[in-house]
Length: 410
Image 1 (tube, rainbow, N blue to C red):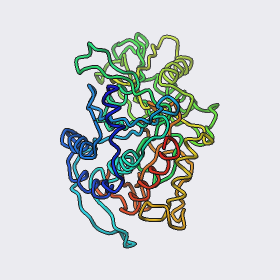
Image 2 (cartoon, helix red, strand yellow):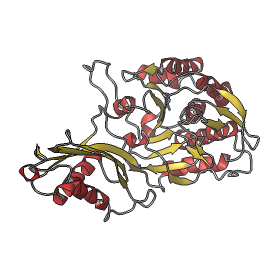
Image 3 (cartoon, helix red, strand yellow):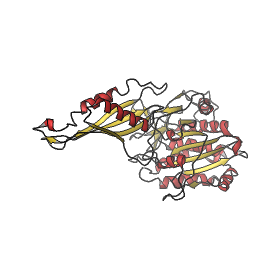
């Protein structure tokens, strides 16, 4: 965003009573965004424009807007981030009630992540920064390749075919995901790849004349099972996991197979990186199998980095601001914070249960926050046919974000 655009946005603060996060959410969930985010992105841009906020869509498809204080360099740059894409299939918007009589919105994106988006918008539109600045940066493809988040972090040059992108360069990040109004400060990463064992083909009647790659699978699988025996458990996330999810090998029933492959799923914990895991796994299998068997491990190709594990110091001021705000508003139901507070146990500092674009912004201090659940006692919620969010929790989350943003820059 240009300096002129930032100044325009900062000079036109929107009254808080002009934005109703619940009304916004009802319209947002009604918009299909599983195949294309164009309509949802236009709705978001129009919502901001109606409230006097200068907004732009960058070359990676991110919606970006910034509100500056009179002294933008005298305080932190707070970034509010979430995504507008959803997984297929589209589930139509339907208001209703849950088994306890709470008002709920059902439909795709209600909790992942249009409910969190509504809460972040409430905080962004309410604040008049007294120091530093706050940026809203909403990505278009978190559920697939995260090209938007990648561009926010690494930027793009003027010669990029989709257009240049300036890095967001934030100091603090709040990432909207369904956390039931808890402050999540860590998450596992996810890598996947293929381990390839190579030998040499031969007639099955003369097996000693070849090198049987399938026979090497047992030693390789044993090495995979032992891989984390000495791994240290993360204090919040526990131990990493490594699971063989597929195996293949051989081309003919009367031939010594020259190649065998194992597909692996890795759920990492800090400080492990994708490349660190790749090289360590390959070395461990190399030690376990016969010298004549070739070993290579390749991560699945993708144009952007994997969502790696991240963690933020639970004692950081950002974590305190979000957690304290959630506790102050918790259970009030209208987001004003004038109830007894913390009736729902809001503001617990804990890990998030899924991989998230928050990992792109770490190691900058990052908190994941929003209304809704990944799963409840009945099973999956996010990404499921029964996806829903409680309306009162959307208001609670909006109130918490308003408080947290005000504490940090307002």
